[in-house]
Image 1 (cartoon, one colour):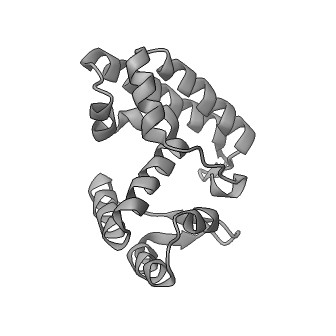
Image 2 (image 1 turned 120 degrees about the vertical axis):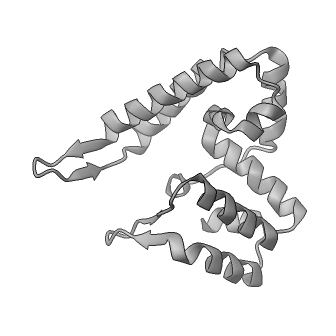
Image 3 (image 1 turned 45 degrees about the horizontal axis):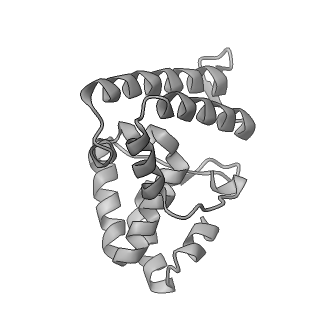
Length: 166
């Protein structure tokens, strides 16, 4: 994401090293869209660590803020993020249920069978934004005032992602 790269002040050297980390998992769909292909959370954790080694502390802190902004309150399904807000067990369970519902709605909205057994994924950015807002509202309602304040602090300064970055 060029805008994020510029915002983080990623140098050419850092960019080359990050490209080396990501190249094995990046694929082009033939229509100008790039996607990642990973084999589970272990791979993603290793990739995250390898990228974090390339960036300095300030860049890593801001990158985490941007990830949280992009993910919205669904990021609270991540154990490390949940711990930062001191979520109670019951809150985590409810958030997991909301996340499951979100994933089902994503499948229903954006995946279709072409009749030949092939799945097609077409994401409508406005429908996705609406679904994310509704999900954030549900999760936000579960948080205490202190947790909401802590969440806002974790997000840092608001960053305007372009539609292309989402």
